Length: 621
Image (cartoon, rainbow, N blue to C red; front, side):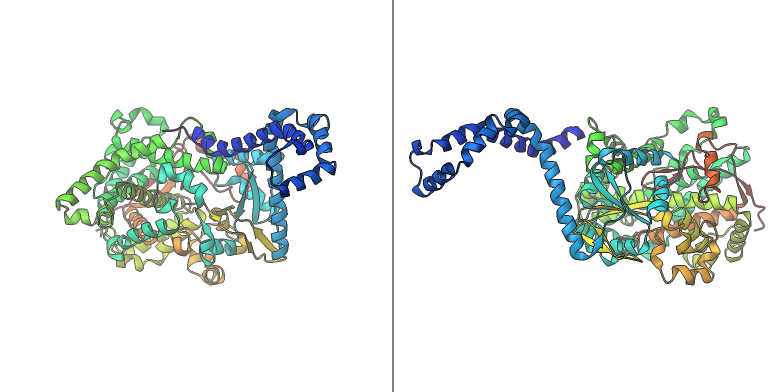
């Protein structure tokens, strides 16, 4: 493969080189051309009309003066020869282009009666300071940390310059509604984000636009029917395995990383649901806390599923880090695409399953069980391995990571709010009992369970930040004053994490975890009249296809967990020290209650895991 940096230069340099080459030729030949114009009467075979015009130009004295400028005047001093002109044409071109864009934008804003979105200042040229801040933000342990201070200072919609490219960041539901729904056709992932994601997501549904996106959406949508997402056999098998292993480890006297448990449950469920074959990550066993890491067997460390999981997480992490470099991300990975090795590991798992399914289809041997998988469903629509492979991976990212995050943070809240855990468990025991497997109909009878999950999604949305790119220039109406001007081809980042925590949108207790807000008068006061303040699954035509699947899987696992365990508590002694919040968080109203720090790939997760202890219930059935 061509190294990313070389590819970037191969695309960018020819135009720049041509610009300099033309300038060099012009300035190298200019004195000779001007000299010929001075002696125009010696030039033969020129049409009479052109000869007359050139003669007039010569007689005006302009040619003589220009020749003097070139040979001995200011031009000769400022541009030391053709090479100097060829070098200086680049900054001159960019300066003139910048001036042109500023003037044309100013005229467009004046025509529309709009104003600029507040720009976050940066003392470094080209937004290099902001790039550095965003890099530190990814390492800070809190989602989109820099955004909060910028929102406080400049308002809920801001403009950032990053490597000479403008980005808009907003937490205004009206603007997000325009991007996702009411003005959907004017916003897309865009070519820059598509290029950034191609080595991980390929041409799957999350990395395409327009007709290709519609094609993927139409292929995938029928699979997420009620009948399919209500079939709990897969959930039950893997949930029981995961919870049994957690109970055994707790019985040995060790805390459990519930995030690891949830991740393995959702990965095994998702791969069986998608492929008809589970990656069997739970067969590796569970990790021990750092203090007992010596007990972790080599079979756990070397288990094939761990390589798959590591590649899955690291590929997403690098993909997210690319976002701060925009179209110039290849320069940060100059000699090697850092995602490709991880994607190759993932494909090593997918490829044999796909080849086997294609072979069985060709021979007409596909079983009903295989036809009931997403892979089997996709094979009904196409034989293109690349399309199927990319689509499977895209759905796997959504199906595994988002649900795993929601389950993990739900348990995080159960551990911090024992009275709510008791209330939720009472609802489970009343509606289902302590051992019966829940059904789809059972889920409808447990309003507090749904409210608890929604409140978890509000404070800890699996995808805390997302983005689109404008196609054409447009405007956003401000609540007071003139319109905001949104330039064409500008990336728009919407920070769901912060919008979900705004007190003006959710009430003065917005930072408090309280599931009742989805059941009492606050629901009608805040969310019902303004549904775009709650976007854990996005909205509009690109709303998450697996939304109900995620609710069902999360609900099922929590029901099984609450049937087995009566109480939950965090295990700070097992939580790795470097993943605990710094003391400075105590002074922040938004961060003060956190007992863990966070990381972000395509989804949010607890750094170092989420270590808990759980007390088994005494069975009465």
